[in-house]
Length: 415
Image 1 (cartoon, rainbow, N blue to C red):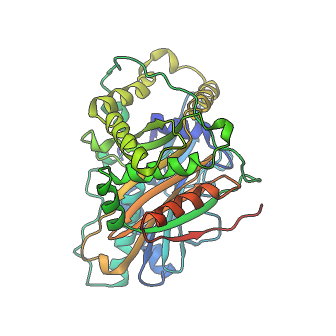
Image 2 (spheres, rainbow, N blue to C red):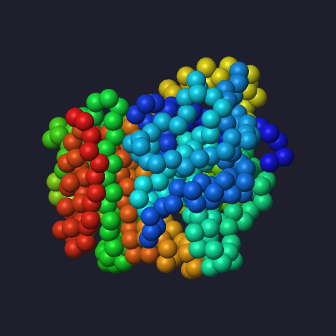
Image 3 (cartoon, one colour):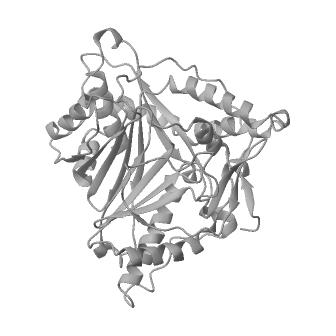
């Protein structure tokens, strides 16, 4: 990078203002290899990868008016996995530390990142680079010609694309948001439970196409039904809202490795008569509407426009953080659960024989599922702050009842 420091983007500001012990705003992407991980080789691969990605070799600092990243010569080191997934990475008191960690367990390599530094797309590229370098070191001579996933320039990778593509677009009319059903009954001690479900991508696609909907709409509708049947009778008149993060690189010519996403919402009020056949098409139609390019662009500009108000810049950081916390709390009233579809993960053909699967998780306040697929392995990584597992039981039972093969793994927590 040409500069030794730079300001955080507008999404990162939200993560910094709202991080908590239960939701430290950390996401994890894992790659499971066909062989046990060798720690020394992994650390050498990590050192090489860090040199390729200088924009992630930063520490986070708090100024009077804004947070900022500063370049560092700190060397990342991979450690055996010892903490719960998505454990906190950043607190203001712990300065001069990298805000990502790499751990390993058996054949699995885990990359966990504080969400202020990048989103799932940037994290996945970094993990792919680590894996590529690791396998090239483990199998010398066989994989040297495999290109690095890091193909963009340092300037493009470090770009604040929110600011770069801001066009000042205004929505024709502000959408009126309603209060929705909120999940309740949380685990003590800020704990999270983690569930990893494996499905056949082909089976899910075939079932989705049979209903005339996308895979995201199929899974989103299944979640809505599972939540509805777990709702208390007196609350069933409330709508359910699924938040879906959207990769803005699909709408703008950006190669940034920083955050560049927004979230859209699909909200629907279900009834006792609803089934997957009735809910999935409604979900799909609503999702297509919010994903129209003009709606995505207007939403992006709406979130970014405060960055361009001169009067806000001299406001002290603690006041900005308090305001962001308040608005985020108000925004949370419109979300029941989150489903993030990272899509199909592609790997160069030369590396495929060495890789078994990928999975992803994100810390959360309530219920957050990250979907990704590699080959025919469709993985749903769910983080849950709920004491009860009934919603997920209903969800996976409905998939099995729909003819899908399901394998499910879960962590244990103190209750």
